[in-house]
Image (tube, rainbow, N blue to C red; front, side, top):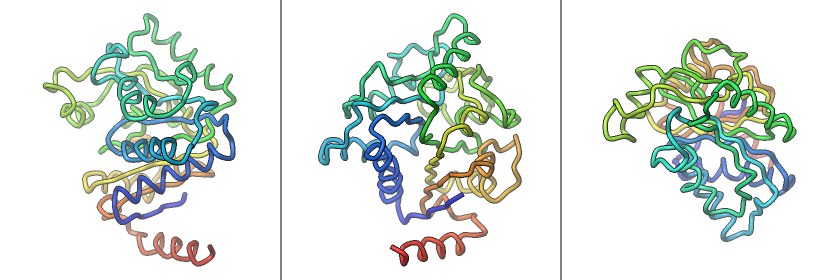
Length: 258
């Protein structure tokens, strides 16, 4: 796992966006996995700028999102489809039919989840999956205790996740208690993983995920099993990394090699 420590959220976002942009440039029909939440917003803003100002072409790209709240229609202000439209899809030339976000209103969640997995397989698998991390160390909505081999499924959210996400709703009781989420096993099948982490509140979870034991109680720790994972973090999020000096030394060596 490569850990890249950036001085600011802006630097982090631009560095992560460059990884995505390089892939799309070299593979115009890339399959991209996207995440919602505050951490990747800057990345998406930079991708939109690269499209607008530098002509980065998304016309042949296919996308799959990690998750969606159960019960929220696509046009709900807090739906993840709405989030992706507002922060990225409406600002690039991606074909709408090639963007996939789990349905929160599927009449048969089990059948939908099986179909979502098939769509990913039929697309050739995900080339690059963008990830954030929850304050309890989860990726997507794979809450503590989720199997590291789990597939896309309906999940029940923990009280901590409900508390964390309550700020996006009028009150905590408005936060849906269930979601459709890619499983950890599904995520690990992506050819490359890119995690973005910012803010002091994420420091404990980040340290546990990349320096602690691999455990289902910190589902982000499964990234340690992946052969090609890169994590971009800002100074605040890196505050509890025991190996910080080592990661920064590697960065210096890499820049010297350039």
